[in-house]
Every structure is written in structure tokens, then in C-alpha cells.
Amino acid sequence: MLREIKAEKITQTVKEMCIRINHFLSDDMKNVLNRAKETEKSELGCKILGQLQQNLQIAESEMIPICQDTGMAVFFVEVGQDVHIIGGLIEDAINEGVRQGYTDGFLRKSVVKDPILRENTKDNTPAIIHYSIVAGDKIKITFAPKGFGSENMSRVFMLKPADGIEGVKNAVLQAVEDAGPNACPPMVVGVGVGGDFEKCAILAKQALTRPAGEHSEIPYVADMERELLERINKTGIGPGGLGGTTTAFAVNVNTYPTHIAGLPVAINICCHANRHIVREL
Image 1 (spheres, rainbow, N blue to C red):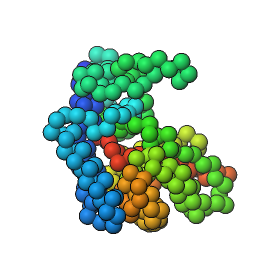
Image 2 (cartoon, rainbow, N blue to C red):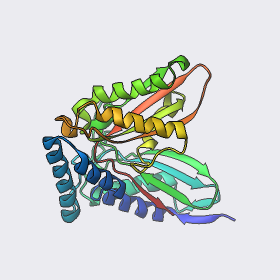
Image 3 (cartoon, rainbow, N blue to C red):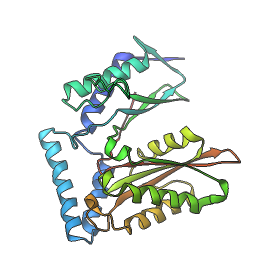
């Protein structure tokens, strides 16, 4: 039996998500920031982390965006196969929620209609939406607004199978070192391994929505996440790129089956304001 969900309900939910996550950082990110403040060995790095904590407090108390770059709206939407959307199309409903959220929430509108002509859409639409059809009669919406200071530092490597796991690790380290201070560290590093050219990039973006500090269920992948985090934090880039022992809060790696001739790897870096929020309808 199909369960009906009104398009209007989706719009209202998305609107609330857009406003909330740009003012209130998720608990997992607050926790890793607090832990980093306690363990950072650089005096200057510790001061910068304290400033980030203060920034979060001001954002929450005064309803000011955590960062002036309120991002391009990225959604991962899991649609139960027993759901029927009534009163409109789901994509229109999501984009209307973004339009209302970014307008009513006084959030910066950063989207241009054409990548060359550069005319602003003035409401931060259209969003980037990744759909998957799943079992059940619910819709799960994960929203992750992505600023482009860190997005521009992301990379895709089409490795050879012979490069193996060491090749993957080297690709991640190269991307982080090349990013340096430009990704507003401390960062969260999302990594996608497998699939094909576009699939590994989606895996990497989705990895950023996993709670920071929560490791992969695959043992060797979890070990790689821990090793990469340790090695990244030894680069000395540090908070704000000014030196220290906290260059990254977390490394999250997602994997997917791939072709016998390939080893695609994508690294999607996010700044310390790694915003993500989940709602289920």
C-alpha cells in the first residue's frame, strides 16, 4: 500500500533544514572541535580553535550564519518505493524549500545560472540532488550545503589497480597537502574509492555526511581512515593553515565495486564548518 506525502511537506522540511544547519553545527562536528582544542599542541593553533568555538556560539545565539559562504545546496534523498508524492514533483518541492530557506533565512545566494555567463539565480537554486530508491514508505533527506573554498580543493585520481592501497593513501595525502590553508582547516576529508569517474566523486561527497569520528564498518577501511588522519595531522598545516597538530578532524572513506582495469579515487575536502543534517518523512 502506497503512503502519500505532500510536496508541501517536503518543501517545509527542506526550508527548515537550510536555515538550521547554517546556524547550528551538528553535534558530531562540535565534539571533534572540542576534542581538538584539548589536544592541539600549537599555542597559535589552540587560539584559532578557540576562535572557531566562539564563532559557533555567536552564530547560534544571534542566528548569524556559521560562515559567509552558505554553500551550494547538496541533497542525498532516499525515496521509499512505497511512497507517492502528491501535490507536485519532489524535485520542485526540494528546490522550493531551498528558495524559501535561503531567502527567508537571509543566507547568501551563491548559485549562477550558467557556469560561463555567471548570472546569479538570486535564490540559491537549483540544488544538486542525488536520489536513490530504497525499501519502505519513508523519505530520508540528507542536506549538506557545500562552500567552494574547500570544494575547489577536491580532486579525482584515476589510478591503476597496481597502485593499490598505498596509491590511494598517497592520492589523499597529495590532495590535502596541495589544499594547504585554502580549504580552511581543520578539515574533514571525504574519500570515495571505486565505482567509476563520477561514482567515486559522489561517494566522497556522501562520506562527508557521515558523523565525524564514526569509522567505516569495513575493518581495513577503518584502519586506513585512522592512519590517514594521523598522517594528515603530522603535515603541520594546522588550524587556519598557520601550523599545528590539527589539520583534519576526520577522514571518512566510502568504497564501491569497480572495473578490473580501474581504481578511481576522489577526495572531497570540507572546511571546519562541515554542515550536514538529516530528516525523515
